[in-house]
Length: 485
Image 1 (cartoon, rainbow, N blue to C red):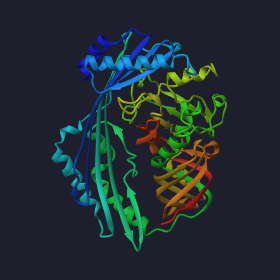
Image 2: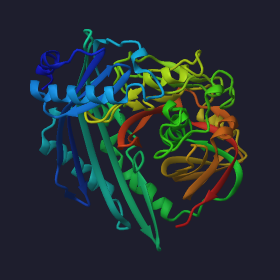
Image 3: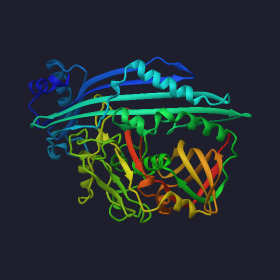
Image 4: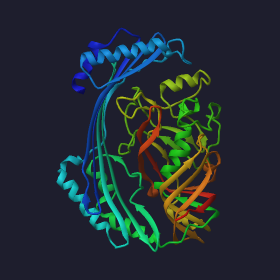
């Protein structure tokens, strides 16, 4: 489809101020072996194009799965009609947007394509991992999954812009549930919502230690089922990268999305406690907090060269030494915001989940940069606290401020030493103050590249893939409590 899209678009495009077409072809495969039984493979192919038209100061979109000349002509006509219908009735004159004409190619890193293994070999791998996870009769559920997505995207504009991008994403997961004396606990390799997800091929499975992780996951599920509940009280918390991922996502990523700050999402996904006047001066966290928007870390899930509006993407600090610097938003939201604050700087992160959705402001790769402390030093510094791993639950208010998060695995730290394992560790806080309690940041040896394939937002809904990387981090005087079960 993409081979013929450009020629068809240029033949079909109307005479308007600006137009763009974003074509997408995506193949995905999800394989699961559960309790020794291979589930039916799930395979999809999705293809189509989104047309954007700016004319007479208005903006219109139209999507089509028919990328013939007639199909694109109909989409162009619909987008043009919508642009004319809203012209003069919007809060911003879209005709004032600077034209974007990207030129370039990007391909994510793939050392060994997953297709080098046949379907039988992929299922045999999952079966062997699944069998190794059943280490005890008290393991009552156990599964191994492998989800792969291959995406090709072409973005073209009426003034000669052309950007090609290719992405291959791999999401492996092992999970086990144990039941002991009426207590059931679930442990996963990197989170029940697939926290280990990266761009690449079979090498991603090696980085995840996928082939050998089943016995560890099962043993930890058994350990949790026999563990006491997490203690409650104010104490230090040491969050490992697979929980830092969720902390970054909910209490930095979503609050900094510019469309939320402008109020666009208030009726569906909520707003933000952040306001435009905070950028450049607001203390979001302690001096140790450095957060980057980084689309250049190639193995990370949301790395790319151009966002879905065609703007070139570059690494930028959004929080530096604790001070808020930039929001997360594409060119359209940034132009609107600059009408109220001309000096505001942004990043290129307008994204769509598919060809049939218009780009909106989304976090992409959002990372906490490593610090100077080793894991041993952080543990030794804690008189009483809990080390928490792997998110399993979250709750946060509509302004992305007051939150409560739960983890799969906890371990008490007492007098600078790791002590007993505890189940259902939870903590709560307020985004506007929590990051100021950041007391130590782990060094590069504690840093891990994680992510989530399931970030929901937008109306109509868009579920998008997001990368997060972080070291282990220590937070002081956090409200900790044990959950039920």
